[in-house]
Amino acid sequence: MDAPTSEPPYGPPPPVQRSYWRRWSKEDVFPEESFRDCSSYKYALSQTCSRLKDRLLDRSSDANELFELPKASEVGMKKCLTWWDLIWLAFGSVVGSGIFTITGLEARDDAGPSIVISYIVSGLSALLSVFCYSEFAVEVPVAGGSFSFLRIELGDFIAFIAAGNIFLEAIVGAAGLGRSWSSYFASMINTDNPDFLRIKASFLSEGFNLLDPIAVIVLLVANGIAMSGTRRTSFLTWITSIISSLLIAFVIVVGFVKGNSANLVPFFPFGAKGVFRAAAVVYWSYTGFDMVATMAEETKQPSRDIPIGLIGSMSVISVIYCLMALSLTMLQKYTEIDRNAAFSVAFDKIGMTWAKYVVSIVAIKGMTTSLLVGSMGQARYTTQIARAHLIPPLFALVHPKTGTPVYATLLTTITSAIVAFFSSLDVLSSVFSFSTLAIFMLMAVALLVRRYYVKDTTPRSDYIKFLICLFIIFGSCLTLAVVWNLNRHGWIEYVVPALIWFLSTLAMSFLPKYRSPKVWGVPLVPWLPSLSIGMNLTLIGSLGTVAFLRFFICSAVMLLYYLFIGLHATYDVAHQDGLGSKNEERNDDDSRVV
Image 1 (spheres, rainbow, N blue to C red):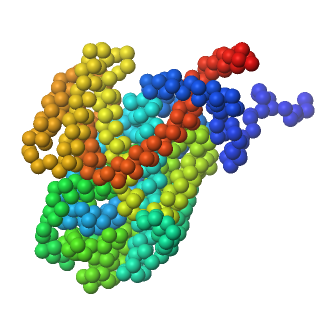
Image 2: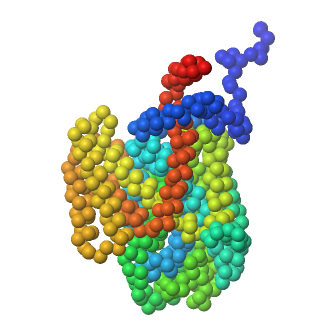
Image 3: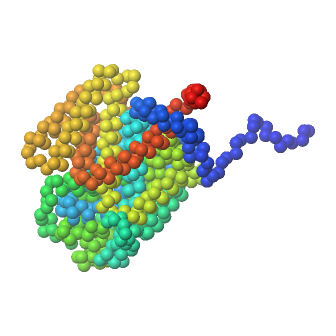
């Protein structure tokens, strides 16, 4: 009998697995050919114009996003979520992400009692966006959410602009929630001064001079839980959300019983413009659903679970928001509403001191689950962006034990903690709303492109007709937003662009569609996506000059990053098969120069 051998019986030994935490070499951060050395980077910069043209015209595909990009994570995410999980993840993410933080601020400064109308307008716009997200998430169930959807339909460059705004949204949203959490916690201890736990730095400018260490601690703890596992975080979210939904019902009932309808007069103290200005900001209250859409890669049956989870939960949440806003404005005159901890202070003022603690607990719980789900969604956005090499692919890695993108979570956690430490809530909310509305508007455009244009299938004549209709829709909506922002009072200035929008959408409805949804799709296309474009642009136009300025400054910084890093990394990945011959050509050119 032969002696046993220590050699493996079949083939070479398996490769040694690298440690998840030892990935900080240059090859892990910048593996692309353009960053190999100084001469490679210099050559890449010299090709910026041609590469930019290439990226502007390039579009991804469903197969690439579904099957190729996830390979960069090395370990797949675990499919462990159902429609039940998605409903409560949406509830936990959305309820608390704005209703407890922005309602008081906007009722006091912009809308008064008509903040209820602001929530109706924002809710309708959000529901239209939910339809768009649901169709894409069913068709392309990946972690990238709107980034992947826009990359497929509108191209690499537009997707980068969205990616930059998604990252900005993630940072600002988490930072705003962290600061609101500390405000509510402080109001439970000292009602008269919600800022008393913050440190005032007089040498910093207004809006950035109240340092908030509590917000930083909350962000670190919430993100730590999210990193521990998707299923664990989901279970914790739906258990606490069920409890908080009962407490929210209590808040609404007490608000109506103890409230005074006389506080609703005047109902429109700031006019219709104030309603829309507030609607643009309170849109923040609905933004958690896009984070839930990024869970598609971890959903067991996306075609069934995603529409039920997103559309069902958002319909109920819209009703809850309107009732909560109405109860708040009945409890207190809008001029007396506290800007930072509105519900807690309102109950305290009517003598129900014990009830203010219930409100604060519900608010803190809502903001905590929003942070948990937001952390999960932000990390999955970041993961897909890293898979595409717009940021270092190190952040695409999924931890083999937890099944979560730990590096991506750490990136968003640290960045948002720094922002939360310095920035006030009003500074954060305007930037956040602009970014979110812009992405939702692009999602509606992408859905129209997906239905009406299929490469190598749509005839050129139909494609041109579609583009003409789309540009007219966009132009008429933009004109309407500008007219609204200029405070024009003549009805003709509103009717003309609205009529042009209607006719251009009607013309598009007669064009043939070249792609139909396989399982579930948005009804009434192109009407609902076209209406979504109009509502989002109108809300953007209501944000004010400062929000525009902050947004364009941030976008300029993103564009510089893209031109110097993101452009060349994505170009190398898209053309990696031809890099060898191009580098040989570059080396020959260098030799001739020498």
